[in-house]
Length: 448
Ligand code: PFF
Image: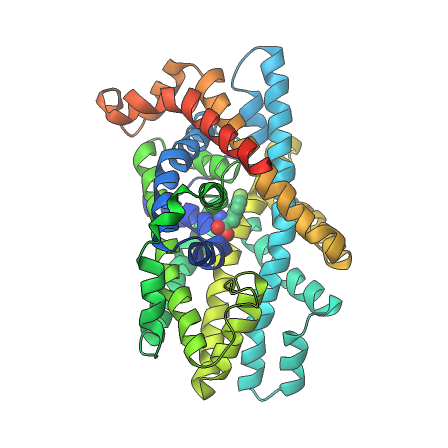
């Protein structure tokens, strides 16, 4: 078998893992959840949960991945010689693979919407009005074509492998993403109303802290945002070099992800209030902030429309931001089935990418076709149930199936003095007991 791919540098891994983590969840999910859940109170709880709950779970995935140096199915089924644990690992691996495939099937649809909204102002700038309005309106043909285009881009990047595909493209796209975000923040802050948005974001409504739904939303958001539970971080960890310090890499990814979410809030919240100042409806009849798809597809476009010629460029920049963020997350999701197809079935990488991407695109088409019946159901199944439960399973594999000495040996690679650190004193216990218990408690609460 050909040698496995590897990230060629720390920064390559960091940008790839941050590329997976930073996505629509950061730019769209986080700011709107913060806006509807007490502003900075949500931010505070989110930050705590990201470091206390999601970071240890991320470390479980990275450590298993680098120890096993294999895809999620082979990694989990090869951690222990016992036949029962092998079978359990195989089943959990297959579940993770299935959830990754299903997440990508809906994520690619949303990514397609972003691409359409990006191309629409471009068409307008080129004075192609009929094209712009076709791109702007929901239709089967538009959704299928745009989702297909995003899927094709994802397949092309993954087909090129770890270094030439995932790493090279993350290294190009992530700085672009950050620059567009900063540029847009700078522009929005020149507009009236931005300061009110900033206040709503940063002044905490502490009365919300006791609200159980706030903690649930923050945990769900942290898990989705850090791409946990489905083997993306595990497979990226498996491409890390032995000389890299795992706890530090994991902490950097968590920081980049939360930092990006926080920064996106500096754009979205002020933009909502600027829109309100310009007479756009931003609260619904019940007085609740419009947060779902309507925020992205109605409120913000209405805001851009009030801005004349600059508005077209802003719309272009914003949806470029969303499309790039979606693409770097999509590639990490496609790598999960592709690595299984390459390593277990011996397919060549390009064929595996085409085959897995093709199947996922077929599922996306089914979801687009039966949208009302399937779309929300797939999202709930994968993100509300799948990710937290698989997150627990992966913590249990790291904490109970792997031996302490195996963990220590793996973590010592790239960090020889790990044994004397706080990380080593806390994490093994944490990943064994605290993380699974906390995730399960929060999960059960959420079902009530
Ligand atoms: N983390 C991505 C986001 O915040 O949009 C979404 C995601 C990517 C979830 C990869 C799960 C995953 F495996």
